[in-house]
Image (tube, rainbow, N blue to C red):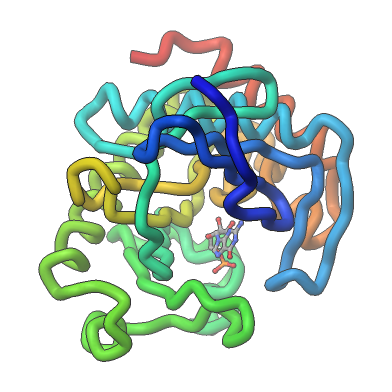
Length: 240
Ligand code: 5GP
């Protein structure tokens, strides 16, 4: 596999072309941003942890019938992924009501409802990733109704699988943000981007300790230490 030109240089990741038009290389940086780029910092080694965790979780979903863009881990910071056409929407799966959703609904942060909640947001930093409904997403030509149905169904299945896996590792997955794209080779709707403590709220089941990006957002814990704990816990179980 030959690494070619840089296609995208984001805050936290870079994407490179390869000699195969249907494959790209994701490279994870040590930078982290929050609140739509308002807050920013560098944590040495964070990109390595994110790459390992994300590769593990995406591979687990692939092997359990949820198609993602992940192909293989290439090195400590890089992974080979299928090329996609980005769908600029975020599907957020909530087991508990925390963060923005708790503020919006006026409930205590961490409230546990009797049902799972799945939200749709427009992935647009300038607008602050606003909540949108299906009609609005179709009106903006971000996706079709059929694609949205698929995204919701995949998100529920992926959310359930990830919740189970984290539970086996002694971690409660409070919520998780999923992104999707159209695979360039088959056109299928597949999970893209990363799944990591940057994109999920993860709480230690025993201690309630925060093991995710809230460490940085709220300045309450050490990011690299928290992410290393997530990796250790995932490494301590047998992932099927
Ligand atoms: P909230 O809506 O409370 O900001 O986020 C809900 C969940 O989705 C959290 O796990 C959060 O990490 C994730 N999430 C939502 N939007 C984004 C985003 O733009 N970037 C990242 N990294 N995570 C997000």
